Image (tube, rainbow, N blue to C red):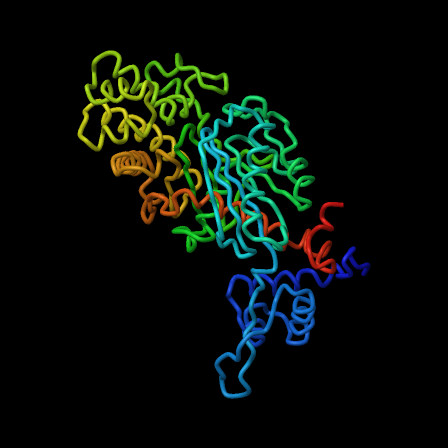
Length: 421
């Protein structure tokens, strides 16, 4: 069979990817373990491993434990062969990071930034922050760039599509711009998808095959993991529960206009912006002395003000959080009955804060879901906080780089710049 551009024959790729995945995941650390775990013959494993050793992706280390014969050499994935630049863009902030090829975060920094400033200014600032990270580590080679954005993304092109909270971003070539700037392949996805990937690969959901990651921040979204793999859907917008309509189920919901242009969306009723809106109304109407005092001090209220007020026992804040948690939980109950996940993780600035919201979501899900679907269901907060999206973006990049579709196109080059052509 004809070889790929890097000299790897297509019929060798499956074994090559299998061996590499086993080594970089730590599932197999010696040649005998590779033979046992891969199901490949010893000769095939030796050939594929030889290719990976020659490429510099894998190296031999110390002697491993003997099982009776000569002690085998342990194998190690060269996670330090290159770095990945990662960024998570939110409605009100930017976080960037630098990881190795195993997804370990080496450095990161973040700052407040309004995504509504548009793609030119925002990506310009991202590039400046990336440059600052690289300046601290001279000589590193960028193997890829991963970005999560708070809106729908056509994964195949790396372009946002009609994102409700990202004015000016519709169709913007995020991938093309960053690829030209850093001379490396780029992947862009919805921020909730990369958060879900981060949890499944390095968080509480590592042992769960079917997971829903729910981000409750300014908006609401969900990342779906099925059989251990991220489910993006045909165009990349699977899991966008923030725009499920509740107009017919919640009194007055049909009068609440969402930023997507529709009315009665879950996000418009229970997201962080909705909590801030309703809290401001309550403060101005004299229904909460705590929120009124905070409004007078700061001039505006956000969802975190509601969480803090609820923690101090403010009845109105408690009511707002319970209402939001109930609406989110009842929406998730439909997904639980349909998808039957083993775990639901709550993340985002609002979702990961406070016990009240978590307890209310749990109560609604368990009350409205089928008993069999909730028999072993766990509903917990994400423990990775602000790092989960950065880690997920790194895993997105390395999984693409080392996939069967791409590995053979650049392996012979030593670095994945061949993917740029």
